[in-house]
Image (tube, rainbow, N blue to C red; front, side):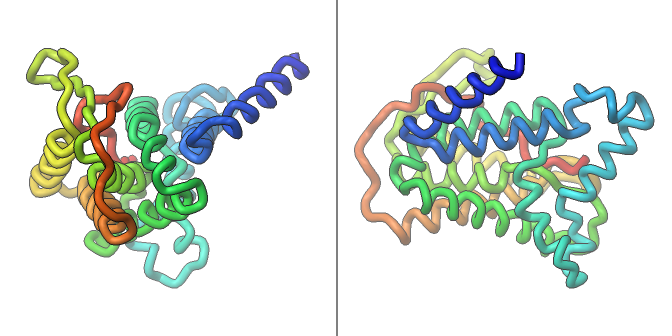
Length: 250
């Protein structure tokens, strides 16, 4: 059994190294592994069940997530949480929604930027998106986890780099029928939804739409400064509906 697992890991590693977007696939793998190993997945019986599991989950999110009220107190550990929170997700839906967006838009963006630059871009923009949310909600005691700030930055960069790429979307108001639109239609529509949701979001736990907007703006701005004219039309092989799961406040 151990030999089979080892062989599978080796094959996966070779596949990532031989792919055109190894950083994207590595980020997806790390997020999935962190989720499966943590208490949020509910798969490890060592974390208990019921109220015991909920208490462990809350402690886990507070340890690795961003708590705005604690972020600016000068603690070195707290200063690292905008980076660690990028690899923590609050639920299966939260994880799968984010990873689908990263899979769809991350590979092409990484190919355009290059591996090292894409890694720094992803982590840097994700950190700043969470930091920006914390600044705007400095009194909040809610923990914030998720990769959506970084993934929103990828969407912003993708919009600038590939504005005419045709993206297949599943829209609820069209009974989830697949329709294909250029990125310059889909992604601004997604950003508009985040803007409207941010303005109507109540206080307390929920989705941190402001982090999405900050990440999207950072990604688009960085790509517009760093790169020249966008590339020609292309096709995105798969795409979700135009609203991902966001940073979660468990």
